[in-house]
Amino acid sequence: MKTTSLNGIWEFCFTKDYTETPLFNSMITVPGCFDVMPGKFGKRGCGHYRRKVFTNGGKIMLTFDGCGVHAAFYWDGVQIGKTVLAYNREELIFDSGDAGEHELMVVTDNFLSQEPSEQFKFFYDFYAFGGIYSDVYLTEFEPEDIRHLAVIPLDHTTGEVKIQVECFEKNPETLKIAFDNGAEEEIPFASEFVKKVPAFKVWSPETPALHTLTVNGKSVSFGIRTLDWSGKRLLLNGKEIKLIGCNRHESHPEFGPATPENLILTDLTAIKEQGFNFVRGSHYPQKEFTLEICDRIGLLVWEEALGWGNHEPELTDPGFCDNEAEQCRRMVRKSINHPSVIIWGFLNEAETNKESVRPLIKRLRDTIREQDQSRPVTFASNRPAKDCCMDLVDILSLNIYPGWYDQIDCDPDGTTLIRPEFEKFAEQFKDVSKPMIVSEIGAAAIYGDHSGYRWSEEYQTDLLKTVVNAILDMDRYSGVALWLFCDANTYVGTGHYLGRPRGFNNKGMLTEHRKPKMSWYKLHELLIERGVVQ
Ligand code: ADA
Image (cartoon, rainbow, N blue to C red; front, side, top):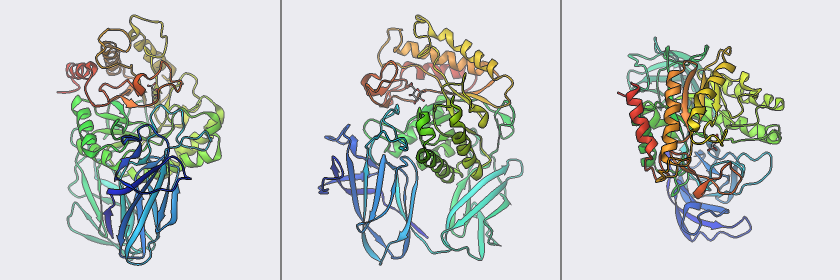
């Protein structure tokens, strides 16, 4: 099996719709969004990406790790697939024809439609960029090559792991297995079996030890750690853990979601060095590179399928439901080996106060559990007081904005609303034997506003410090993901409450160009004072 990256320079053309003939008179890099380019910023239309690919002939697999809003894929002019699942992995297996040079073309648009079945809606509070924004690669394989290898840790005290093997077309007679490039063991083929990792080390945020498993030449990296959410506390490797972290969008004004690796590494390292142990990948499946870094630096991740504020008509639409379930399936399959991923999520802030939505929530939970029972499943609810679906999932996750959206006439000090709100939910859920976390909370701050009022760096600082202190003080809460790591592109004028000055969600602790606001520094000091960071 041979995997080759198809990232790099591709021929490119932008057209305003599908009727215009593409001229391919310019170039673009892959990954690369087209609507961050000069002259195309903010435009809706189609990006046509084209390049030559050399193969040895026969069946191949092309993998696209994120493009959209919609995309169609062509090989030598023939359509080989299409997707409506932005941010999700697409694997296309087909006969590439004779050995030699071929043409690969991707046509991807950033049109937002009002169709209920659409996954990326016009009202989402983050900008829908267009293009191929993640890695593309080619895999040339033999029928018996291994397509997918999953390693699921079972016991952090014995190093036992469950291994699942899936081949491309045919199962080989035997499997040659080695851990950490050590001695090879040959066993009869099995699609699932249990092994003990020799001389294993436990993965944790403090000691993010990784292992490698190689089976018939295919290698994957994994970590040994276990999670327990059977009571009110979340346990990592048998010990209670408090998640203190933030939400992060894979976004930058100059790159959209085609964030360069250097930026991802810098963001995640900054989050870790801040003293946070947790990042919620809002609101879509995460890039491989992002998760690889989280594995390596020991940052715990909540990964979720794309969704935002979806309403009953979509949540009961068969097309939307099938797509959301397919997203959940692909997300788990893609990320199963990452020890950093400790929570699976979906459908941020859906209308989960409607009974009619329960079948979908149950379906998504079951889709995830069918593939992985080693991690808890949740969704972030912005209506916890009247939510009727939270009993279906493993963690109670609250998106609440006391001191910002709620009781907005409470000036001068909305921060006094935080603890009472936390106490209210602690009381509401006191008999529910599930961990509870605040999955979003925050306040916007315009960089440089030092008025002390709402929108100032001071107000944001006070609010976030109050939140972190309360979460650290209150036993009922297993953690918080502050909203938001850095300011991120969204829309002005789409009716978002209180508006979105500059076309950004300004609740970042850093600006969109990663300049820290006051809250970033002050929270670090607080985490030192509270003994969270040494
Ligand atoms: C919600 C939502 C976020 C963001 C936030 C806000 O909680 O989940 O994506 O829109 O509100 O800034 O209002």
